[in-house]
Length: 256
Picture 1 (spheres, rainbow, N blue to C red):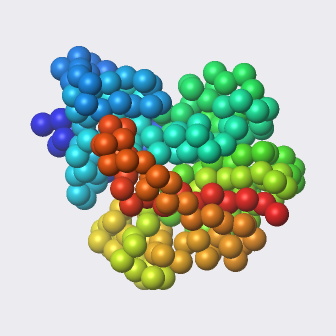
Picture 2 (tube, rainbow, N blue to C red):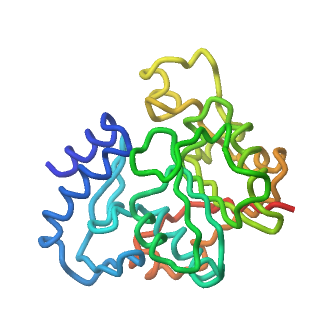
Picture 3 (cartoon, rainbow, N blue to C red):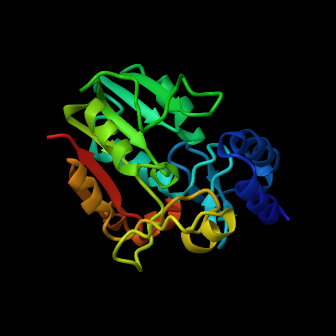
């Protein structure tokens, strides 16, 4: 029943409202999942298992109760904590379409000048279109923008804008839903209805399906891109412990 409710919510409720609906639901039932098999590194909470998640195909042990983190969020958190000075050094951060699991923890970090931004979310600090970011050049040490570019009309323009506002030596994390079975990104103007988009792009509001050329696209815009298979540095036990995605490549983009 819970799996069905979450599936319907993720398909038909706008993402920025899902956070409130799902957070209330999960916190209400989390007491029944106490244990020590899975640990969410973001909240520090431990569970005997966490919930499945997915629009078309449900993934087991994906959605954590208290933080609402998914597999990719936990991997990003561990990367930032273990591979960068994000949690300790002074940084000005732009977080576009901020995920629920990150907002409160990042806002609590006194070393960060942390700005959230979104086109429609009522909780964003700044309302903006990622294709036209209203900040000066070289303004941010870090730009985070995950699972957004597949929704944007002109994704290259959005990438260029994020490059423009990033400081030289700064970095960004720009994850997208990626289909490893296709070499080139699928984008066809005739795929123009919610039904066709769900069929070909796997979601009703996606405008393309990125393939293995995603890193190449980012490089063509001007980023130095590291395609980091960070999850492979964890033992199998830790992958299961933190419920991490086994095939997620982190796209770490730097400005020359």
